[in-house]
Image (tube, rainbow, N blue to C red; front, side, top):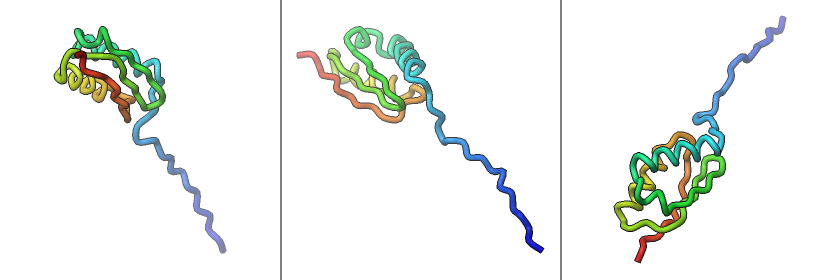
Length: 87
């Protein structure tokens, strides 16, 4: 007599995907709170899980503030930081 095994296990992704427009909005709010001065000169491009930062900031401190604000945003798994320090 054979027994059938029914597998009812479902696997949820470890980090659900967040729509790029939601990530972008969250990043813009984070930049307003944490790096408002630098945010005026920063361009943000968002793909699924990836953020590309470009533009110029006045100092290393501002560069790190921008990156930190982005890194803490839900849905961001990778940052391509192309920011430059103003000369």
